[in-house]
Image 1 (cartoon, each protein chain N blue to C red):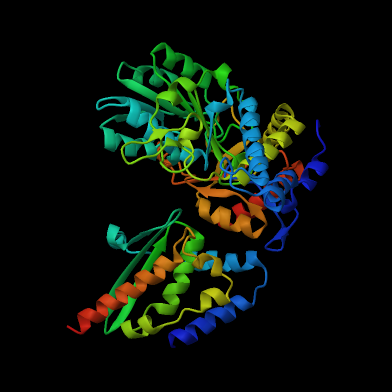
Image 2 (cartoon, rainbow over the protein chains, first blue to last red):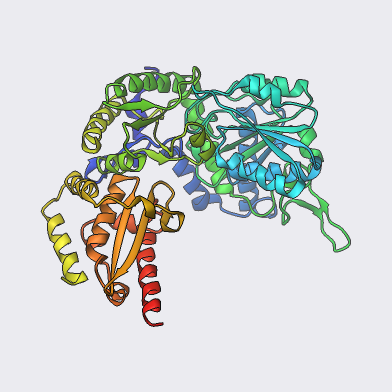
Length: 406
Length: 141
């Protein structure tokens, strides 16, 4: 073990509590991750010591707070290896990042008859904004099929790519199946056809090292709350050449250069896309989360989570009637499953009574559920603070639940 | 028995258990024992679609009393449906409209009452009251 699990768990106060009279086992990490004290303290410290509206004030607190905020922009740029921190736009989360892109990129570049390629395994957040755009602009959404194993049909992708394609928007990692998509290949193929690519990195940013320059993606979206940072903060990375040309998303303070009723000019990047007072306390918390992840090391996190996943998959296979959904070759620590004919809601409700927090339902990916002809799954998603002991307890609980519902 | 008395009976049955799993075992048992749903009534207008589970409720008026049939694709939800029907089915529209459903809270299933909860117990109660209102309006015509 590359790191001390006990010490790590001590960093997460929320894990140490009973739920329904049983010790909490939190396995809903793909929905949101818990926050270490380092992050909680960093955000609280903003309000205790430096809270002040940023970018505007001439006074001390405003300067310090602005500096702390902008420091995180640099840190984030460095974390994903963006060429410049101007390419990091702070948003409320992945959903807002995608909405920003669909709105600004869509209004600037797309015209009637254009096509956008998505995949069958997208989260609703990377479907609905594009459907709204499609309605507004008369563009068409094309969908890459998913195979029985839960992987993208790359042949199908190549066939969809044509001269009408204006953008490819694809998830890095499936939130339901944990499948890691071949985004490098998708980006290379798209670029050969002259098509820009947005990667939805919500499920990837805390599992794999993301290097946007190496990937060569045009846009990369992610949320803070899934990477141990506070909720309400997210990022849209975009290549400067696109961001510079794109129309603003929302109007308001900060994003302007000069406002007059005869015409308003806009601020430079990245502020052009950050109307209104940002969630600077959350952003500073995001900085603490990046420090935390760097400190443990994402490679070690990956190794630990993978070992735990392999162990869980093996142990869970012993549960009578269990059926795994998706068997991708490359995957993160997410296990989607069904217990015999039991409804996922029933499984999740009983597990809750035994202290386990798992997610049930369609996971905001109804097209993928339709693809597998199921109404939902039960999903266990592991983080580096989960343990083998928790897996063992989960397996025992699942056996009990299977018996009750059998 | 009045709706209130029926609720007290349910509360008494559940009070025998203090372990969650025993309470849910009973719910599952009640769900399994629920009278089978008439397939002819499995129609869109009888469907309450929650985020996760589906519930069908069908109501008919017999001799001034509302008879309700119900079903769900999730067994725990079906158990809750069974309890609701036991308490409310066979009563007049006025009795149903005036009823105060306190048993859900009392037996510890309050969490299923939250409006965002995926099984839509609130929607079920609302639907049954809507049926009662519709039948009452028809009676008064």
